[in-house]
Image (cartoon, rainbow, N blue to C red; front, side, top):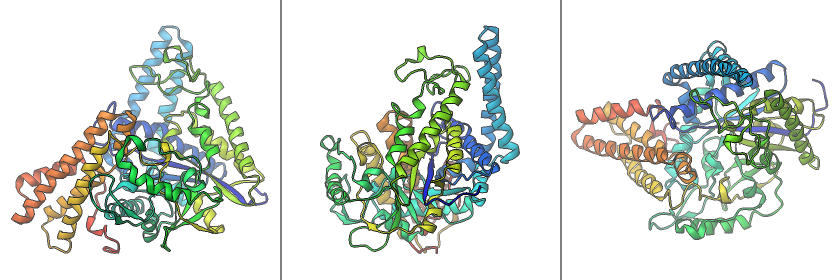
Length: 569
């Protein structure tokens, strides 16, 4: 494909993440989340990327795979049970087709045949093409230069609110180590969970009565660990709308919000969303590079009212046929109740895909037309494509096909762009996230305060224990127990639990997970304390350890004594 190389670039950033659900329930909350995401998002995206590669169309997508997601997709328990899940869907499609044809519902029977082909195709490719290894498939495309895979915090901990710098270091270092294990190289970029960022300043925990103490900025952790770049939401870089809507309702956030307002007002100069910047905290000289999220392209995909996925021709997510859980209805209308949804028509959906791909590329061109150079970054949760928006992977494919033949733009990953365009300016970034209100409320509020109280208590117990046992000649069971204690701390810190509690999307499940991991942490901590006094774990302590290792067996190579900077380098 010979054409003049443009100076303006575009990339999708797809953030793939699910919390640790293996051995923690099935349906409606638990491992079925993972099976759904693998079959409806990760495999279809992999197939999309591979088709583009075969057609010699540049993919150049930045694909985020959180460490906790990579660990789950790589476990034998997932690989074996995922085959059963796919076979159940294939069986359901057969049964639905028979049922619909017997009732004379030819259109729905044809859709059941569509699902048979969909899940049958997934099963065949999962086994024969990808060797039952989604991570290997993604790594293959990264090795070919088509994907740039980035890491994240270990269990997607919400970094700005963690109490100790040691916790931030633990989340980031573990994320890097797990990435290197699965992808065979050092990551260049990172997705900060929820785009949550905090600069360096005298920080006071929002809960409790502790005095303020100086914290390192998130960008310092990235720099020290060799991470080149991260992402932020529009308002934190550009100075757009960010409203502390909930501050009057929740006392714990007021102090943090006051600091945010002070720092936020200082960022509202002329910042270009399409240029990367070095980020450094006030008085510091070490940081990482930040890319901002483009708001126009974000609206087209994220908005439930104005975005493409709400088009009447696309597949409706919420209405399912039972048994089997397959979907046969279209969106029909944003305000149409589920009972009134019309039968899905794939040909009309295909037409919508082409229209929306044309429109999206026109927005990219229009947005960048006044830029002499630059990169438009369009970040989304990966699970939006295929799972929530069934046609999303095909739409993404058609967008990249159109970008490939455009005269004035090219697809380029963030790392690739930085090789030719160094940042021109260093800036200070204010505290915040891409959550509602631009701050921390989604994760810290009156419904989740108890979660953070438990996280802070666990941090205050764990790190002194880690320091006291460093360089000690400990028995094997005690070493394993402290490592398992570290896993329970990381799992407790997952940002998913407060998010699910606040949004009510799986509130009971999230609350039970917090309680499970905290209770496991406290029981194991007391067992370790006794073991240190007695010289080893008791038989009861060993039984507890083994049960937790079997249940929460991610990060098998974890060595928490390496969490201190430089300890194991």
